[in-house]
Length: 200
Image (tube, rainbow, N blue to C red; front, side, top):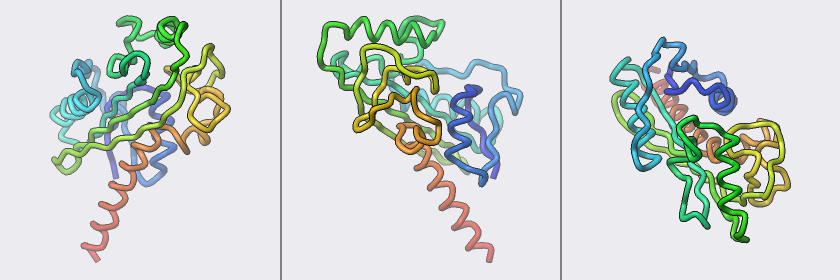
């Protein structure tokens, strides 16, 4: 099954290919030669994911999914949320984003946070949403070199390693993105199974 992921983010592509396995041929925007900026100007993660998926589906007519992820911090009333990638500016600099978060939290003991991923799938011209959440805390300094985004300062509940200290396989057992994409994988597998039964 061929499906388009509305992104060129190599880190995400690597994670998602690891989660979905070999049952699907995953194409990036680069693979289908789409160079245009995909809109990401909605106020909610759900809106951004749907906007991206609709944009690519309209351009290609192909089955497509898009995701949007936000770090939601309790002491910051859910910020950075949908602004996570550009929290410190439009340059989308991960280091600057982390420094801004650490600065804002420097005087608070409440460091509870959660990562939330929303996936919008347009499949056979119908729209579906899937969500994955992982809770944790924001530590006071960066640890680890794996992953991307806020991974070096996010410590998942019940773990002693940040996402940036974990091997990809370990992260994919518990991460917000993994949980959302596992739901996507189950949906696509169920569709494939049902479709195969119908053709027997």
